[in-house]
Length: 371
Ligand code: AMP
Image 1: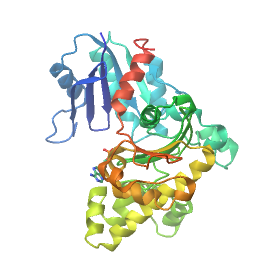
Image 2: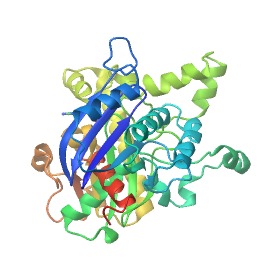
Image 3: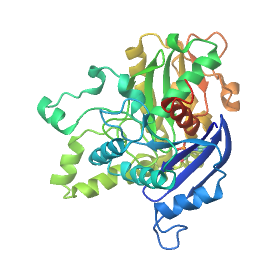
Image 4: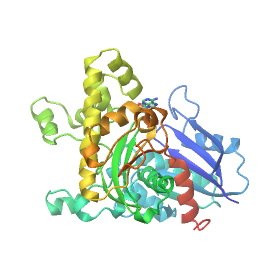
């Protein structure tokens, strides 16, 4: 009775993974839901298809990935009607992300009414960041009324890899300080002190911080005023530009780091500059989080780029030996778990992230199946 189904429902897709303990017994995805020629007309049909295919005997719980938990959800939460309504109320904070999850929750609860379901929030791990790390210096009343603050995202990933880093180093989690760099299509950095997040680079939305595949990361907010007033772009056009045509896509014309690296190697100046902007931003956050944490035991790279691009890891940390940070070329090229030389004051690690496994484990804990 330890099977847990993890569902990640987007606006037009559903990804699923069925766990037995920590073992994946089935996984897959349904794309282009509701689109002409897509496999399913709506989320109900997509999820019904998934459940018909899976052997759900002994299913103990369903875990749903939910991007935004707002101020209310600081841990994985068993879903009741009231919790589902609260996730719906958060849609204005995450208009691109929460609606898909909510549909997935509603449909799965109808299809599996007797199975406990849990919402696992991307924001929850960052609930431990102190107020001075989440507030911006803006009008307090406006901020309170409209929920303007940093929430942070990729929480399941930062939680998992920071814990794994301590395990790999053979240290207790509670005594280990880690800077985690989740570099995938989306990208974010976090400072984790003793297993608790104390700083992160994303904000109210997953737009700010590091340079991403198509998202800009940090920009001066005045850019928005300028684009609106002087360039005449609408707010929707500005949002579209910063979220879909920014990042590597904006700088290099391609959103995939593999292509950026290829074009750079072939002498493309735009790709070379995009790479420099990308790694420079990582360095700026690493430096900032060294100062926030004071003592750092490890810097950990994860996700598509972090796990697979030794060039990015080496360039982001180059020249930091005076700070106790070094990357061993051969270990880095092999992508070993620890890529710093033996005896480095700060270890540099590569830890593959396991967001679905983390969601399954948090689901088990929330439903009392595991402690
Ligand atoms: P993720 O969101 O974690 O799935 O990461 C996806 C991104 O990882 C892709 O868009 C690529 O840019 C990047 N990626 C995957 N494999 C490699 C690789 N071998 N080298 C560089 N980047 C990679």
